[in-house]
Length: 185
Image 1: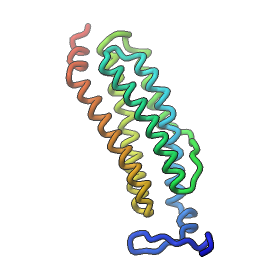
Image 2: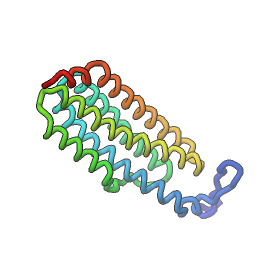
Image 3: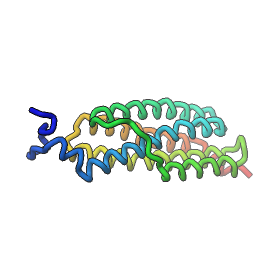
Image 4: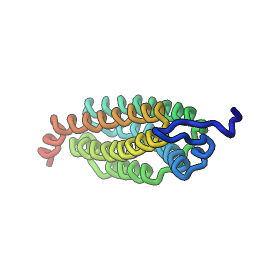
């Protein structure tokens, strides 16, 4: 069968693969993948700054662990691009740039070595997580809709890791950082 006539099964429908690649939904999906690819790469750099600014060892370790995990997310996204026959490219993501800038402002506006800074850094990190959770959740559902089951599995794995990181940050905050920050003058 010539390449131009490749068919794929999506639920009960048979779809021409080239038509799928030219669909508005596929184009949006690829654009969104490029957006989160940019974001994940930017997050790697931001996590270095956040780790350096953190006061407690628990938070420093959480940022270090998440940076390693984020590098895996970048590799996983590169695999997603390959699975849909696209080149991994970054598309500037204004949303993540704004969230990262806000995190940098937190570092500048809080006292070094304070629990208040750590509490604020956790909130900044969770804003990043929530952006990623929304993005990966939506992309996984689009992948399912388009019949990209392997892609959906990869995106859902990343989604679960992002949710776990968000939960871990909450645990760190609730264990002692928020209480200690409240005790500061």
